[in-house]
Length: 237
Length: 303
Image 1 (cartoon, chains in turn purple, cyan):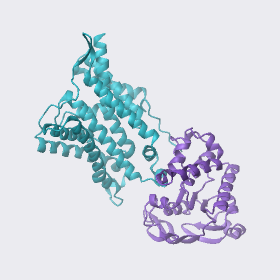
Image 2: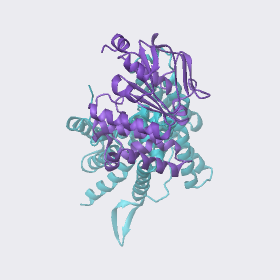
Image 3: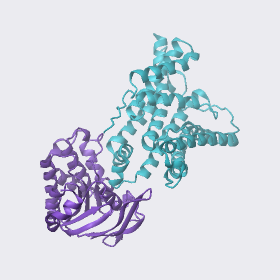
Image 4: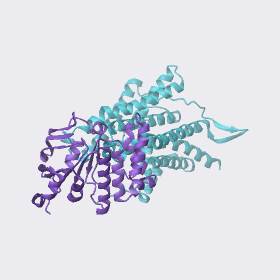
């Protein structure tokens, strides 16, 4: 269980997150939606340790994450797929995937080979293009690669920052459905941040609506989809 | 023909040393974004240590190994003791601007250079001394004819070649090498992959320290050793790195060899006093024709 309480993250005394509290249940997909500047990316970056919060706590089961370094948060099973299809374009596809499992290499060499094989089965196109530079991939393939890099670390919690950003609707739907299947099949906990609310809420169990760094709705995903007045007020459609 | 061969072989041997210096500079530049002006100061210091050991009766090879280990340690100490504390202060007003953030480590490296030279003055009185080579610097003979290459040249070329092969294997075939490349290219994605980018960076400083230490050991049998003899090497190595594209390891090695030939041919066919002008002209030409370096890639700005 991921439990966030009273989380505040400031940039030059502007509160990007202004006292956020919610929980993400294990094995389920929790989707965080909100307009630009609502604090969605900051939320994920604070969970993964890239930003240090001013106050509040983030608990993953009984571990407090706010005092840990980025690397040790990743090593404790929390993988983030950052915004903008973050892959290292000068490295090959295979190297990007290897990078994600590198820290586990000493103790889990055999398992790492299995994990690598699994992501290639999930995204066969990456296997076909494994020796090409990641920079030569299309936007959708890069997003697949960024997700694969996170998955080979065998995370318990996957943080996805706007995976559909800049992708054709069909491609982003395909990627979200693969994540959905993965969550249902393996019990992976997913925290999905999206501006594109419909696709993201459709697969989610739970929905959180953020506005100006605060939680304005914390509902089962179905209810959040149905509540057109909330959406009209905060998302504008 | 003899003078051509002489220029060619001595150019290869010199170029090999410039390639090492340039490699050391580029490793730190890629990993930490710092041009390390202290690099050859570190090399000078470790070569003095080797020389001291040899004077006390230790063998050349044990001194050689100790100098390389000291080079690695010195590189790591510079990063851990100075660079990391300098750049990791979040609340310093001085470090808030990007330009200061990049300038301060460079100034600090000049400071280290000064300190190392002063220490060499204190410990060894800044004395100029010879440094032995394990191979006699005589021309190699086949039958009665002297070849244009000396045994020492061959030794230098062999050692550097071996180093470059090992470095290439390290960067392309090992996980740590992949981690180093990834950290240099995109520290954030690398950290999000669970890799300790700070430690990887320190390793980069250590490898760079070892490479420059090796350059010091290989160049001083020819130039002698004093606190200032290696300064010139930094200038040439830096030029080689810029010509090669600063961010490309292959490019900087290539740049080193090209500069070796330029310097050697000017020495043989023109006069030694023209070497500096030749380096400058070559640098300007290279910057006009390929400003991104021989193998450097153009920076693409996304909008």
